Amino acid sequence: MTDKDQRISRKLVTIAALSLGAGVIGYFGGYAFGETSVETGYELSMSVIIALAVAVMYLTTAGLVLVGTAVPKFGENVLNVEDAEEIEEMRAMVLNSAFALGSWGAALLVIALAEPAGPISPLHSFLVSAAGIVLGCYFAAVSYRHSDELMMAVNREAAVWAYGLVFCVIGGWAMAAHADLLAPPAPLDVMTGFYALVLLATCIAAGRRGMLKLR
Image (cartoon, rainbow, N blue to C red; front, top):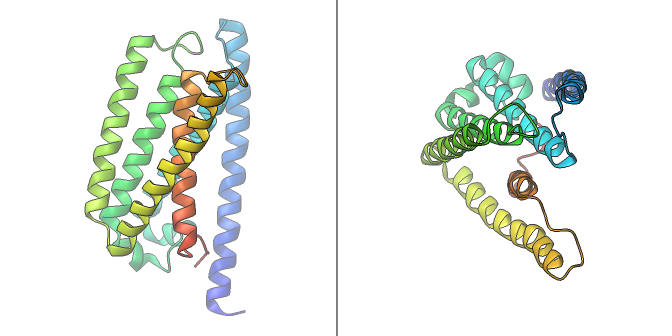
């Protein structure tokens, strides 16, 4: 086995272990919250559960990227990079991208926990969530300015894919609901849909350039 094969194998094991750990924590955290919601009377609908799952996905990704950037030796085992030096070269872009993901994830988490689904008042939830989205857009813009030509191309293609996916999926759902073929989406479903489809669009754009292949 070559050094590259060993590095990829080590990275796979590390990612699998972290994913398992996050899954266990998420399961018990969700179970505990579900038990609490029964006792306190919170209305934990499927829309809220899905929104929380997507929010945790964003926050987990942001956390891994932040730690991986702060500790490059750890980062080369969990991030899709050649080595620690590549992390140092992309530090500004990656850090701001992680801040954007974290801000957006927190925004979705807070709005999903607005009353009656959670303990946060509707006004406070809206204000904090709106601030998180604006802050995430700021960090995303800074990250884009620090991107090289390849990453700028990926970002532009991801935006095109996101537009198309949102138009087809959410727009198609709205059309079907207007025609009384489906139940209309809840506001939180629309927001979660934006989050999920943007993430999918990014994966498509990166995958088309072979950037999802482990290195």
